[in-house]
Image (cartoon, rainbow, N blue to C red; front, side):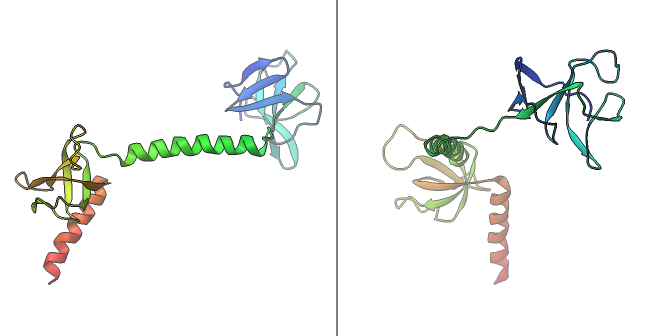
Length: 190
């Protein structure tokens, strides 16, 4: 692997790479460490350039700018990824934040919008145009009225057959297509 260009120097002994924080260590280099070449005079290993440490047949090496493998020696400063240990309370708080983010994403994915395909879960008892299980397209949303019928749904393939429905589950176009094909197949199975 050639020189790493995305390394950010945070301090004299600290760098960041791909979201990880690396600190200088006096230990010998190990696979996965990042090293900085500290000697000038080599075109194939510029001074101040960073490389990731690899294992080549048991040798700890870097791949220089010419594609050659070079042993890691005293000409390099070794940076090791910092391991952050969180308390149980910190872990729980981080997981809660992650869960809240996932719940928001799920709500966005499942919230019906105009033009979405859906399967009717609960039909309007005052209207027999749309039934439970019908595959529909949402034509309009009514977020103002509180009559419990937020979705104006149109049966797929029909511009005449529509109704306001209280509950529907969002479907992807592929899911709607599969459900419609299954309904057609069921008609011909008898």
